Length: 253
Image 1: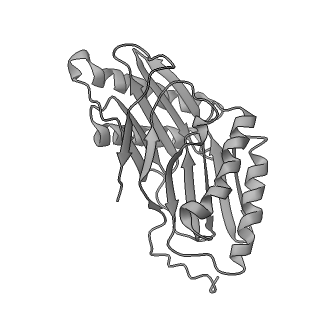
Image 2: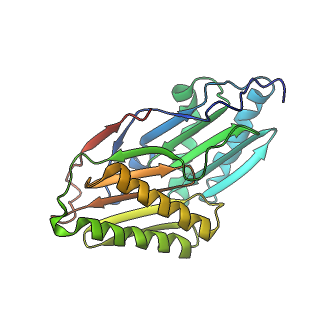
């Protein structure tokens, strides 16, 4: 692959600022396509690899109408997508199908690797051989601006809820879990090609990073390379659909 100007010692993806509207209640189809973050490599695909990108993306979009996760390698490019485990096939396809058109606007023309995370799905691709980050590498975080005082035992509740996620993803068929524990709502998911044990270890790492990075924030969402976890605590009860949530912008260098 000498014609591809890719430096293997370069970092894989640059994860930039994104705005995340955090509302941990059932979302509408429109909410599923909100941009959370993007990662775009500095290097560009050279010919003939750039011509192979569109067929790869089209293949992934087509697969998303049938299942929630797929990974494939075609013509020296590898790619994958995944939808949140509670999306229908139709909503999954709608979510994934938006990303190819967003890539040019977000990343420019044909970067050597890219990852776009929407609230309901993500899609990533890279040229074969592009340097990968570890499975538990922190890609992006968002911490709620409101904080709780631990007089009510918030930390113990959160630990118990995170334990539910770790156990839940390992016992589910799609490595996805969502549930609640004493007004604390949690969600976690692993990339679809992980084994149960690796998934549990990844979620455990995400939970630890959520605690370290966000402290006593009333809500958080933490994305690692191969999994993510989120929580939202409602000390005064779950808000109604007319309630609005706070916004938090994270700049990650």
